[in-house]
Image (tube, rainbow, N blue to C red; front, side):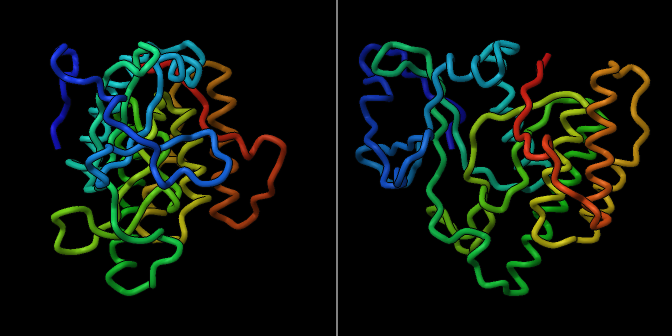
Length: 258
């Protein structure tokens, strides 16, 4: 797909004018989906820059989030074979607000929970979780920003996009959740363990390498305490002794990305 499209030319209609509500909008949800009026093969999410400022508690400039998101989605596909059919576009909405339009190709298939567990599918599922665990292990070693929200099988679809000859697992939940720092990475790895549908040997080995890596000396006291908590909870999940407490359900924790 094209990396970006320039909608600033006055002769070209703004992107929002080409969109209609998607048929994915069912029930009560805070997240609304859209599609192109003349192209039903794409699903579009829209975040205003103010949405991104709120998500990151004003710690990160929205353009930093957008540019990192573009690069990180490219990276997981190129270097880790996690298929992400996404395009990120900056334009204004009908109110004139700066927005990020996240355009994801629609996949014809089914959720990973409902797919028949054939040997071919299970091999691809194992490869996915090995890739995710390797991704986080590499990010721990390089201390780079990372995608925070890769772990739940509900975020993926097994099927085909337009032009495919065979089925693949695709990441279709492409909201911009990004973290940086060891404590946050360990938090995301804990959720990876909790969501992993099977204890794939190589993925578990990568995860143990992450949580058994000694903490860095330059961590702040706050980050060290958070990291130690995440490590202990991760170990208890792996060992089957995990008990839910008051703070174990915390999801995305925003962090500075610089």
